Image 1 (cartoon, rainbow, N blue to C red):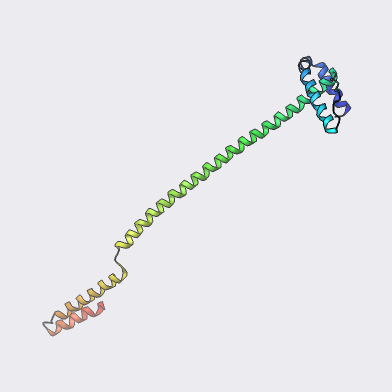
Image 2 (image 1 turned 30 degrees about the vertical axis):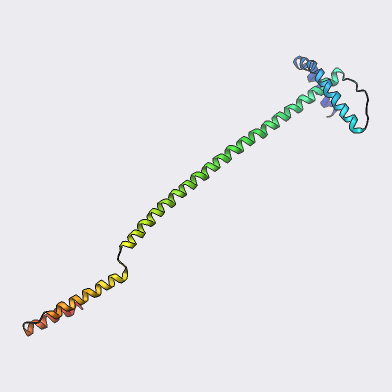
Length: 170
């Protein structure tokens, strides 16, 4: 931080009585924090067994304000992560429910189509095959031919009229 930043922090800390009381109560903790931090740094740099001086009140206030700021930022960042995770989970659940609903609708539609297919197959099976229809038509022609052949004409004019009547049908 710049020097002006420290002076702003110092001014805020010295003017705020409540923060000052909090910092006095936390001096022991800050002293412990300072001791652990300095001891760790010294060991990393290779100095062992050096005596670490306790912090004065102004340095302790600075350290407390810095820790408080870092803790606030950490808590806000962690809260944002947790809230984003919850939002993502809710969105994922909603998406899965929509997919499940679409899947169920498709399954129902396939079921309806299967029933319609079965009904159509039953209709096709009950309908006479095309060859059977042609066979019936051939039998009807034979019967007509026999009927016409079995009627002997009683008069010669009647024979010509029966032929005249039958010829337009052909």
